[in-house]
Image 1 (cartoon, rainbow, N blue to C red):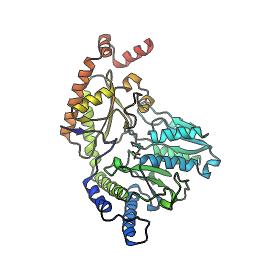
Image 2 (cartoon, rainbow, N blue to C red; image 1 turned 30 degrees about the vertical axis):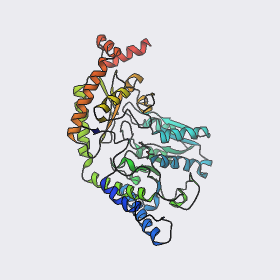
Image 3 (cartoon, rainbow, N blue to C red; image 1 turned 30 degrees about the horizontal axis):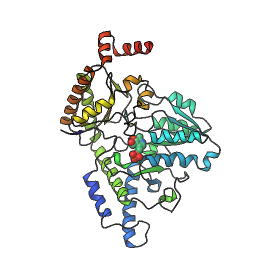
Image 4 (cartoon, rainbow, N blue to C red; image 1 turned 135 degrees about the horizontal axis):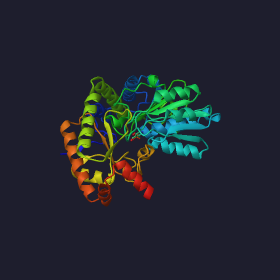
Length: 405
Ligand SMILES: Cc1ncc(COP(=O)(O)O)c(C=O)c1O
């Protein structure tokens, strides 16, 4: 059996989306900027996709700028604001410690350019600390960037509350909503944000396409310089098939949500969590705050996440240790460390992310596989043996080890 539980890394392309894209990879190849019929046919479809994305997030079509994905949308938001004349008076950017690298690394680059950057801490439940936000956001704050849903632990962040704080101080607000769109309702007006990033491949659309919502009236500087496409904010001939696929994927994801797909996935996710907790002792569920319905992050103390993923892969179960971008590095996840997890526990963490086609049979198979792999790996762990001999509970044992080292 092959079970894919890594939908936060990427999702398969939806059949209906592929069907919708194919004519634009075959016969409708025109450049949407061309004045002739070849171009006009594609322009119409691109604008229809823009409308679909705008409708899903409660925006106007003119407020949607298509990009090459979530990373570019995040970069366009952060550098678009900080490169603009708006940055002449205000020099502070406030973000959180658990953002995706697309935001964290951009913020580090801004720091090098002389901006003051504050990385807000999160609670042990994985939700940004509102008291720290209140303290950090001031009259010098140009931009606050807070993700809507975390990619590793799935926690939903209080974007609306933070946006209100930012507005009170005259700061702009960006949200990276890449992991939220398609999983929960996302309405930019309700969130009160000026900018929001989205990515197609997280919701059964094609890879290499995304969008930035830019509230009417906000003027950004482009990252790239060139033609007039995307209101000059993203010059270059549009990835028309990708954009068209993205539009369809967003619309279909919205219909799934309206039909209660999220509740079905949540029930399966909760089942997976229950089965794992029943079968495996000494585990920690990461992200106790409100979460997107498909994500579960668990630490299995005394085993290595990398060893777990490889062993599970051999059993046909695909999961990840955190964000796809950081797997391969031996550093524990910055998100889990921000929750206050000791590094040795953070090392043994897995992210399970379910999708619209995940079945109960798959969840049960995965739970069984995880239980037997954890048991096998722990049998080789001298530290686990030491822990069992100590007769302490996990927290006490870790505390003792911390004191000893
Ligand atoms: C929260 C978040 N932001 C941004 C991105 C980057 O999106 P893309 O892969 O489209 O560049 C991801 C993808 O992992 C993500 O999870």
